[in-house]
Image (cartoon, rainbow, N blue to C red; front, side, top):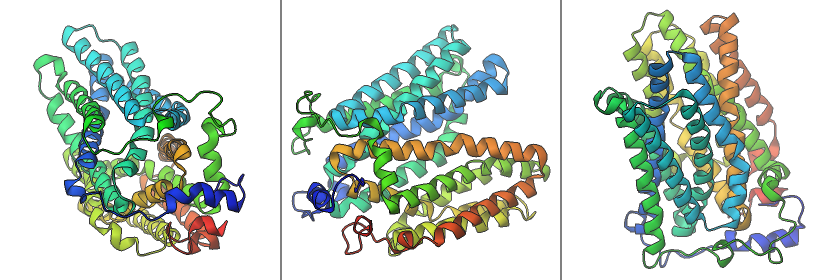
Amino acid sequence: MDTGARSATSRAAHEAPAAKPVSTVGYPPLWRNVQFQTLWIGASMSTLGVAVADVAYPLAILAITGSPGRAGLFAALLSAGLLGCGLPAGQLADRYDRRTIVIAAESCRALVTATVADGLIAGWISLPMLLVAAVLLGAGQSVSGAARLPLVRSVVAPEQLTSALVQDEVRQSGAQLTGPPLAGALYAIRALAHAVPFLFTAGSFVVALLSAVLMKIMPGGARPDPQFLAAPSPSARDKHDGGMLAGLRAIWSHPVLRAAMTLLALVNTVAAGVDLVIIVLLRHQHVQSGVIGLVLASAAAGSLAGAPLVKVLHRLRPGALLICEAALLAAGFFLLALPFGPWWVAGILFVSMLAVPAMRVLLDVLVLRQAPDKERGRIVAAVMVLLGFGTPAGVGAAGLLLQYLAATTTMLVLGAVLTLAVVVFAAQRKLLQARWPGGSGRPEAQN
């Protein structure tokens, strides 16, 4: 990826290995690629464990303290740990063996979660302990995520990358769909002082670390470059590598990725508070809580159903795809304001999320195919941080609007903000003209 600091000649020379077509000879089909499937299974279990924990921890805190505010504090500290460690995690992933990092991160998350489960069973759990666990779990998620995503490219051929990322998107959508109800069912088990969901989550992290261990010992597996096997010596280390801010600088200096990331961050911020607004809307319509849960789950179902559409939607240019999906979401926000009942809301959420997997895979493709390997971890971490900041900001803004406006009006305001963003970014020619990496109109060629 062009960072703006290199000349065109040096940039081309530096990025040649990432852009050079590589034959799929030596790489089996994805379904027979044991390395990739092992990585995928570990990532799937880790993601499912996080989805279960996101529900189980607030339930435990409510049971211990009876305070929704303290449950919210746990979520805030979790986000703080994730965002605060995001950029350092990226630098770590660029300097050390990424599979070793995944093993270490998942081991720590398993240990923290198992300690919480033990505290519940033994009766010595406390709120301060849970809050410390929140920070550690958020940090572990950042470290594991920054190292795991670049590993995908090391075990699949370049021509298989999009299909691999589609399968990875199925993992995320499946966890979002099954995690919350599974967490509720596990927490309802009264045995072991409601510690069953925490034991499940700890076990999922153990599976994730074992999958990374197996990737190391399998014959025929992809090997990292030697400089990632151990910490480089100061003399061999690039003194001008930009440090942990290199990922942010790379994205900001690239016109297309700067525009794409800004639009995605805005979409993520606006959409983060929609669930809260929908809950208020449906409660005003006297909809039962169980039905509200099913309505919200329709978003994850739409995302899961949209995974097979990724290759079809990627026939559009990347900028056009971003603009169209943002416009679709904006239209969906306006339609959600219509008082047609819960199943109307469920249908709108389902349709609005169909193109979201294509957007996520789009971002992964642009990052993985253009970023130099020595910067890839920091660029992935920068993307995680930029998108992560939107969640607390969006939820807070939605809550503030609901404090002074009706839920219907709040939904219309969110739709208007997103519509304005669509109009502004649709006028950016470089974004609309950008092509997929590897083509004659590669975004980096347009800088």
